[in-house]
Structures are given as structure tokens and as C-alpha cells.
Length: 255
Image (cartoon, rainbow, N blue to C red; front, side, top):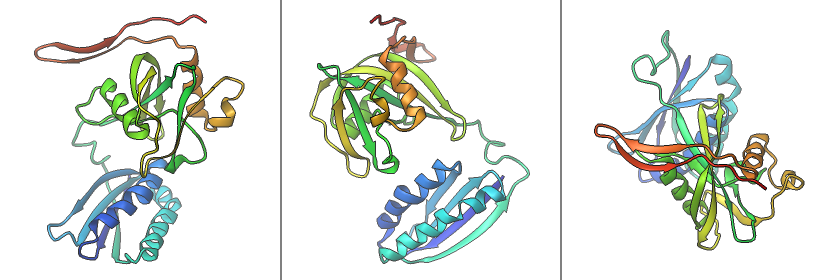
């Protein structure tokens, strides 16, 4: 493992601007290419940011130096040039997993239809080359059901009713496992979300035209599975004492 420790001396009162650039560019590009964020901290005066990234090896780090350079160019373009220092660290142990239980990322996605049997699709700013079903990361303490309701509402302004789970998809590269729900439009008019979605539509989606809308193979397979769904059992519960929070039973749709 190789770690990059980045220290930024920033202008007073500009923390929000630096955070925006970090989340819209550096974070997305690093994570998309397999790097892991260990942590990001700011001091009490809000004039220094410490960020630590994990890379598989030095070659992996060097291949992503273009991300670091691009982030600095964006800062300069927006008048936010600052003093940055970088230090590479190595570890004989897979820090931090050597000291803490592993944490995996869960995400959810929804195949949502309206009364015309059209499917809800969105175009995200950071994946503008394709459309996809709405969804996102499950927050800590949140059930899968709560997460999909929240994500669809945030990205599209639409409330839905859920039918069941149609598939489970594991991205081994990024460590993200996605759970896909099928559901129906309940209320709300579709709208875009700032810094999230640039396009929100209901459209007829079939095996014949899906390539016109969904260009990434991993998103396409999820939608195709959901078209002819075999639903999976799912339940959310609390332990000690046991409390069942919600459950979807197994069922199959026949065309």
C-alpha cells in the first residue's frame, strides 16, 4: 500500500470553495480510478486541510498524478491558488484495516415505472456519457429501503412505492455493492438536482432501444434484469431485542 498525505494551506474564508472543488473533481476522479480516501481534516482556523489517500502501489499513484494536477489547475482558474505539500507514505500492514473491521460501501438503485410503463432515468454530472437508473450510497444507520426513497427524491423530486429487489451487483474494483429495487411512481414531477443530475426523464425502455440511453454495461445489465424481475427476499431488522423493520417476500412476475 502507498499513501499520499496532502496538506493545503488555504485562504481564510474559502473552505467551502475548496470543499466544492474536492467533491466535484478530486474525490470523484480518485475513487472512480480505485483510490481510497482514508480521511480529510481541517484545523480550527479553517486555513489548513489535511487529506490522506490510499493507492494500491506507487505505479497506481503515478498513473493518477494527472488528477492532482487538474485539481490544482481548477483552483488556480477560480482564484484559489494555495500552498500544497505532498508526502508519500508506505505501510507494511494494510492500514487501516489492520486495526479496524473492514467497511464496504452499499448503494441502491431503482427501476421506477409510471402509469405508461415508462422508466425513470437520470444523467449524472460525473457520468455524463450515459443515462442510468437513479440511486446512490446508503448512509450509515439507514435501511436499503430508506436509502432508495431518499436518493430518488433527492435526484429527481419523485416519490415512489417499492415492489421488491431485482438484483445484487458487486463492483470488486471499487468495493461497492449495489442493490436494485423495482418500484412505481407515486407522486412528484421530475426535476434535476444541483451538482447531481443534469437530466431526468421518463421514457419507454426496451431491449431494442436500451443502448440508446444506457451506454455502460454494468448499468445496462441491472435494467435488463429489472425488466423481467425475479424478486429476492429482503428484510431489515434491529437486534437485541429483535425488531423487524420491513420485509419484501419472494415473488415472480410473468409476462
